[in-house]
Amino acid sequence: MINQPTSNLNFNDYLDWHSLNDTQTELLPEHLQLAVRLAESIYLSQQRWQVYLCALGTLGFEQWLKERAPDLQIHSDSASIWQPATANLLAAACNIQVGAFKICVITASVLTDQHSIPHAVFHIPDFAAHFYVLMQVEEEEQQVAISGFMNYEQYLSYQEAARLQVEQDWTYTLPQTCFNSDANALLLSLRCLNSNAIELPAIPSIGTNTVAALKQKLSRIKPQLQKQHPWELLTVNEGITLLSNSDLINWVYNVVTPSLVQPLINVGLWLNNKIDIVAQELGWMLMPLPALSELRSLQDNFDQIRASLEQKGVYIPSSARGAYRDLDSEQGSLRMYAITWKLTETPDNPEWTLLIALSPQPQAQMTNTLTLEVRDETKQLFEQSLSDTSQGILYAQVIGNWNERFWVTITADDVVFEIPPFGLELDNA
Image (tube, rainbow, N blue to C red):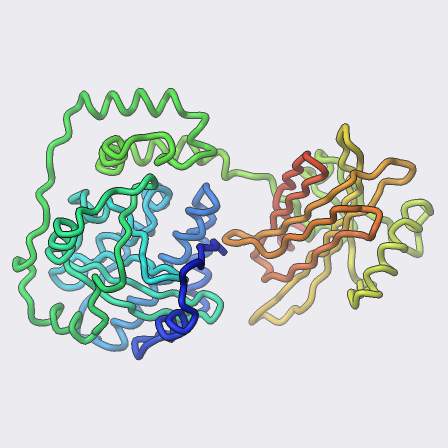
């Protein structure tokens, strides 16, 4: 989860503001699955999380409107949030259609009443909306609620009065007080107001020379685009040109897409005492079954780890299978164990677990410090460090559905090892 600063925050106000109001809507399992699939197509971790939340907010808004006002027709299939190339650059759901009105769904801040909103949803005519709906997303509780709404003309009035400045990340900061918290007023406007009463900006003509110049700059910074946000590399005006041109949006996405294609370590094969090509090429070796083990040094070494884990209440069943890989650096070495087993086989919610343990290699010097991080497609699940590796082992255990993948990052002293994702693909086993 993306942490935000909590300084100068009155805790009682935080509790009051975050109590979901009577627009509270339950997210369905298929909503979460759809949002996860979208997040998998986003290439930078922070943007991935924001897109994931916005997708949940969009689905929750659509669910709420269908339940609360079935007479209003909503069409969100063409919303910008469902277009990965655009969502990579803009974590907002523009171009939702409710009757004759354009709606933009944006996600509320989780900690304060100051909301960071992409300036593009106001400044770029293709994305501008009659109404901006602020959604509060309680992801862990699988619930959303409408925090407020404003129309485009209200934004213009506030922008002029407050002299809003675009932040470095191409956003505006708007206070909660800008938004009308009465969701019934939104329904009334959608039912009774004429869409022509709210004038949206006209689409300007951007010169071909401006687009060509930006395309040249994007080509020069192509390697950086795979690691940095475009707003770290472009000016605000260049950002407006980029987001106003679908060809440039798609070009940027195609540049970074190869970084999304990662080899999968298929632990489903391990359960059948097989190993996949990806794991073999990376140096993984299957751990022998205890009864058949002839590699006593390996077995004895892991028995020590197993005993240590059992003291901590972690028990490895006999059905578990695993593999290990040695990681070496100039500062020292370590051995990484990955153990997996199926938890349930019920069709409703089949689950599997992945256990990662780090230990010294036999007859080798261990690194002095270790950090172990595990994350899924959208957020960090585990992070822990050892400042003195002689004091114990470092391990993590995570549980997921059969379609979930887990990424592991190990920092040994100053060396970072990025491990390709682990997944359970029984169809290929």
